[in-house]
Image 1 (cartoon, one colour):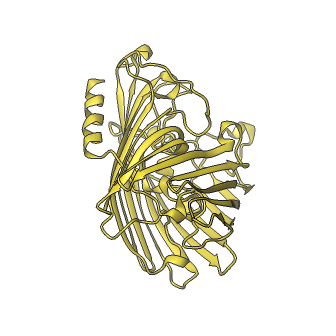
Image 2: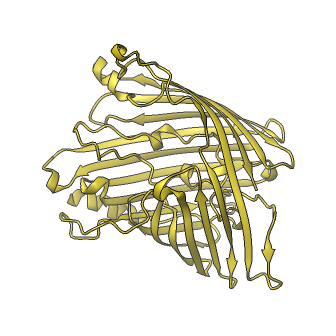
Length: 403
């Protein structure tokens, strides 16, 4: 455990941080991309109130391979297929007293605590220091920090969202690389208009829990919370939180970032999870390029009486290019060592996509196809187990409207 803490401490010294968003992407859901839209504003411009919404409707096709299916029960290879509404977000954002920004959004497509998608206030003392409190995105990975309605593909990389495989029968322990939305506090700012940082302390329970449920670590005697940080370098100005927008085709922006976190007694107090990430994103006129690599170390708490620990790695590279002012083809290669670095085998997940933006309508049409391949496994059983629960073939067509 001391080794894990040393790794995290060294990471935080090198990375605590993240870039600031442009004013038009503060809400994390809808990018205004320079559009004022419908806004109430005071004459002195110190107070601003803007309602917004985002609705996504998708049709999904998922084909699973035969491993894990029981032919005795006539189980089909096609599951989780049909229409869905990934997000139906209604919210408002704005400014108060000239130095406070705020945001609240409800995702009607979710349930339980995840209904409250975001609720935060951000108090800016100076360019180099601000304090954000409430429920918002944790500072980890370019993919999840991108505005929800501005992603290159309708679904995030599987390497971020898929639970890793642990060789123990603990149903409550299914960590993934992504940390996502959470409740907490963070300090952030920009220095020299190039360096961005974020240091945050969060519950570590994710977006579905809006209450205080954590305790003190029995092993380390510190609060069992998520300690996270990110540092970015943006030499040409702030990178918009978008992966391509037809209203921003003339930009030249570069972002390089490192991030890391420690989730103490995560997964129902069963494990201590250490994450680290490296990201690069470049937006140059019509071209968007990005790549990330992330690592996770999972070690069990002493009460579990399991001495082994496990290491995982994943990442992706993706590109999009506006061949016209409205049409953006996209490519992505995604990989994940889901069964651990000490065991052979890797998931390879190439994807192709196509985005079309309807002029003056705030409508976005996205289509993608993704395949999951497996390579390098020592036995056929390892190969069969590695993609359990994941669709071998996925096709998605999604329509998005924002206001």
